Amino acid sequence: MAPVRCIFDSGLPKQLSVCLLALLAHCLFFTAVVCAQPSSATIKASLNRDHVLIGEPIELHIEVKTGADRPVTKWFNLPDSFNHLEVLSRSPIDSVRGASLTTYRQAFTITGFDSGIWVIPAVKVIINKKTIQADSLPVTIVPVQLKDSTYHDIREIIDVPDEKAPWWYWVAGVLSLIALGVLVWLWLKSRPGKPVAGTTVNAFSPLQEAMNGLRQLAAEQLTDKGEWKKYYSVLTGIFKRYMERKFQTHAMQKTTGELLLQLKSRLDKEQVSETAEALRIADAVKFAKYRPDGEQAAGSLYTIEKTIQALDHLKS
Image (cartoon, rainbow, N blue to C red; front, side):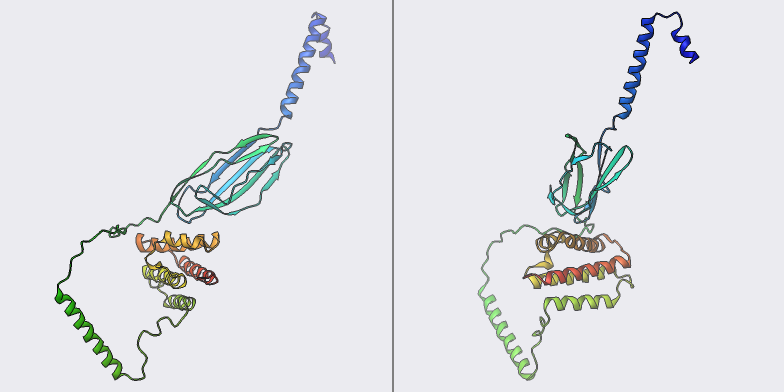
């Protein structure tokens, strides 16, 4: 206590000593109040990638940090579909509590089936009646790039002037048909009791035909021989042939994007995303000379088989 006696027993005026004590008390009170204040709340939104092909998944991560005594009172709601993007899955809200800080996390798997630049809007949370929000995030969805210079898009229909054919064209045509009919009749007459060729083309149902084709493709082991383009051409051909017979559409002439639009109204989002991945690899192999590994090739065949089985339960 000797130092204290020296201070207050010195020649300082009594009023000055009282002022110094009051100032010291105010400083200690202000320091305690500042230390007791919780850290300001923060929110962060991030993507694992922002430039993907049609149907590829994107992971969106949301992280909120706030003081332990200031919990989140209202979490944001991200709809299943927004801005040409769709949510495939979402994780539960995870919270980690510390001595002075609480961290909230949630993850989303998102994809898109329309090419373009789309924006994930700024997500907002409320903490003690105070709203904080993250930055909006742009996402670029691009179609499969075709590097084959011989590829050309379908042109518009143009009018062709109608020119009347000479009369002898018609005569030659009628005579040719008569001759063809006579030849067919003579051929059938020479083969009594034998079935006409082509009557068993559709003996199998669309599902049976597709399953037989997939089993035969797996048995040929084209990937072991390095024939990747042939493998994926046959695989996509089996799938398009099934779609054509099952739903009576011209699937053989449709692009990958057009097929995915048809599947979008018939299957769940996860199945459509898996099928889009298999078809995207097939396009990359055929047009961009991409070479996947054996596991990817087997996975593509399994995905197409599972998709065909799922579609077969639907009405045509």
